[in-house]
Length: 111
Image (cartoon, rainbow, N blue to C red; front, top):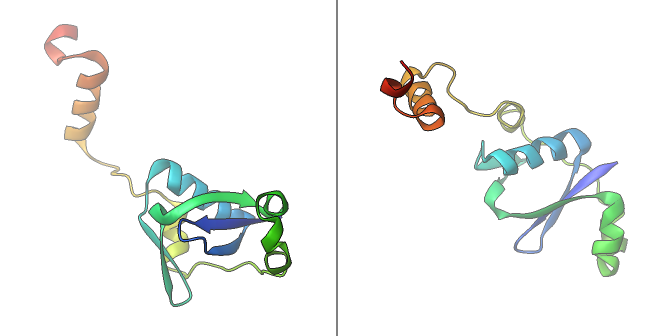
C-alpha cells in the first residue's frame, strides 16, 4: 500500500507507507516545514490531505487512470532523517521549568 499526498494546488505525489506515516506525523506535530523529493521542495503546510492509494479511487474517480500508474517517490537523504525525528530540544531546563509552571502553577505554590 502507498499513500497519495494531495496538495492545496491539486497536485499529487505518491510515497511509500513509511514516508506517508512520517509525513502524517510531521503535519500533526508541525515538526518540519518542508521536505525535498528530487529537485523539488514541498511545503508541509501545502498538504491538503494524505490518503491511501486504495482511498484514491473513491476520492478521485476521474483521475484514477493517472493515479493508478503513479510510483512511490522517495524524499532526498536530507529530508528523510528530518521526517524521522522531530526537531525538539533535548536539554532545555528553562522550557521544562515553564512547562511545569503551566501544569502545576508557580513553584511557590507546590514547594
